[in-house]
Image 1 (cartoon, rainbow, N blue to C red):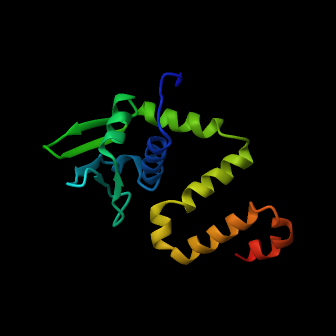
Image 2: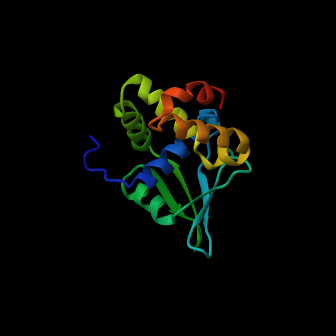
Length: 153
């Protein structure tokens, strides 16, 4: 079903972050994402689901998601646009999440995605720093002797 959709990892990450941000908003209160292209060539994305934490992205990444049918995008001015996630975009998310590893790996991957977001990093810098240290020690070749330290981090 999704064999003809070819995305770069940054585009997948963007789509998934947008879908996950909507999870906190009741379906009947969901509105379109708004966006504005900056003079630096990036786009600022804003939505009630990401209050005070506007997200940046490349406009071309949003256009790629649009051309793949995963978002529905409309330009509302020379540098302004709005978009929403299509049902195909939601199905792509469900499919991709379901195929990436065993259930325990999917939970681990989901947790890692949440902790590594810009929002988490800026809101909880100390927690992010400790998590980063624990993560790097866990995958080091001598991690067995440091499991207690990793657990405390």
